[in-house]
Image (cartoon, rainbow, N blue to C red; front, side):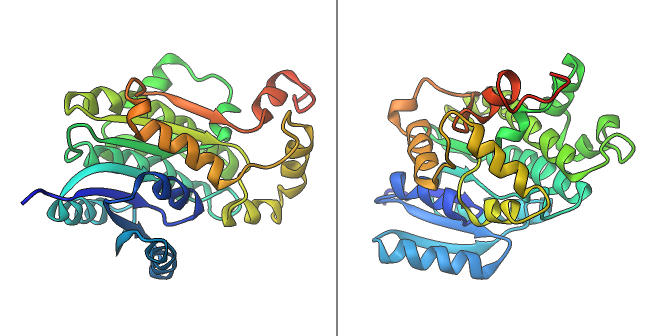
Length: 279
């Protein structure tokens, strides 16, 4: 009997759903989230749209939890897709928690799923435009974020509390680290005949973005939208379209890459009206 193709979605929010709706027809979807209510709500929506869905819980900051997820996925069939869209924002967590979830958690997911991803498989990690607003790191720092063994990652000098003093800096470092990690992991995934890429969205209207817009940095976020080339926020469906390209046959030559889609916010930050006085 032919094994089922399994697509694992970590983080059952609107971006993960938007991607999987475009690539999940005829496949078994495994939704994993820290909160059961998130999983079940997303699964209900997808089932009512005709998708075959299972759910489970995962804490991406726990090695045991991520290993349990990969073990479960492997028993279900051939894991041919991974959508990693879990994370916390600067308005939701402390610097330490952001580094643990967004940086370490992503590295852990890439490491563990890189052991089981099936030939011809593909993955997408959702990073952020914030990683593109961090000033350039040294080559040594880039390499450390990309290749340090997962369990040693949070011990790096550059990530200690005296170096990372606020949640926004932690978030920027984490998202820069995500894209660097994906580039390095693409080498390992390639040996299994699989691909992995990063999408760095700007302000996409999701519950996380709404937390930011109503939080202490809300005015800054609204200014980013107003002064960007697009002049608006993005939608999960727009991220879904890019995700489907990267995970499908039309993206077969793309791996180890990061795709910034922010309506021009980063361009305005470095070269336009959003530029800080020191730029």
